Image (cartoon, rainbow, N blue to C red; front, side, top):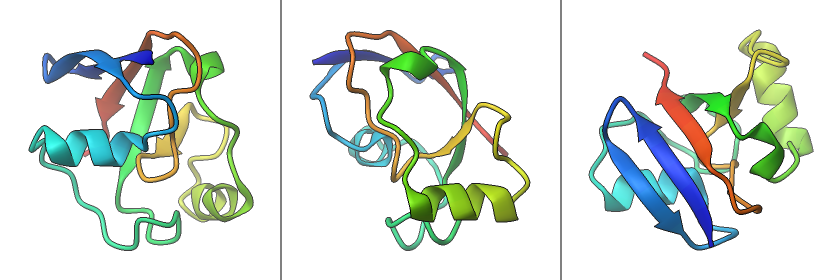
Length: 96
């Protein structure tokens, strides 16, 4: 289990490890654009405010998409690929 905080004031609680943040957001009915769920479309961009070290590493597909979006290295992840691995907390903001 890891702690996830969705800002502003959308959710704060424990989530199972290895569960994509997108899936958590969909279960909570948080409005977020998404399409492929594989890290290719880039529609589910989120900003990691803190807790980066508690996330899974960025995979090849996600890295390529982040580079195309010019979001690599700017504390951005794709919600479909990002998973909380450590105890957290991981604080996330939606990108509009």
